[in-house]
Amino acid sequence: MWKIAAAGMTASPLAHAQSFSDPRERAMGAAELGALTDLRIDLVKGALQLTPDQAKYWPAIEEAIRTRAKNRQARLEKIVETVGSARAADNPMEVLRNRDPVSFLNRRAEALAQRSADIKRLADAWQPLYPTLKPEQKARMAALALFVIRDLSDALEQRRVVAEEEEDD
Image 1: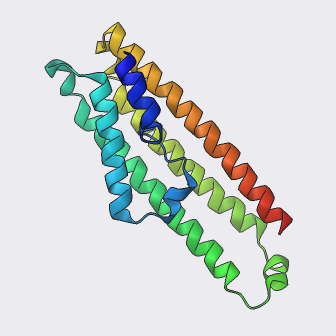
Image 2 (image 1 turned 45 degrees about the horizontal axis):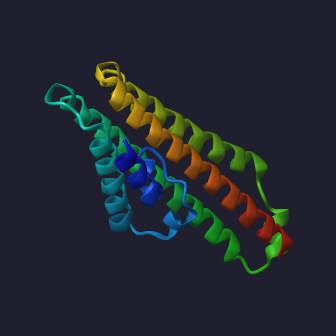
């Protein structure tokens, strides 16, 4: 158990296989994000140490993780495109005056609906495997979840700081 915890501590950004929380990931290319997703998947699969009977459930989970990562990257690219076109405008004051809050809310709702669908797909993929896990596998999964929560909390704090800095500019 301590080996897994140590691995999680040293590679904690890799621990959250189902979510990207690090703002640096926005700057990564598709190949780098694919490699990061592979590492995250390998970490979770390695920590679980699935039996051959359990391994038959893994492909659906892996596909759900990959789909979620791909959809997240697409959402980030869309955000970069939208923000980039707004920043490219000649007059920033015009951009502020011409903001469309309804359009923003619709884009946000679409993104949240996509995230919700991805999470539901992931939960559905995990459903057949989870009851077959032994107590020690569930404990390792819980340890990984703690690292995920910590990383998400750190990322949210980092986003808050960046947002405050941008407001101050």
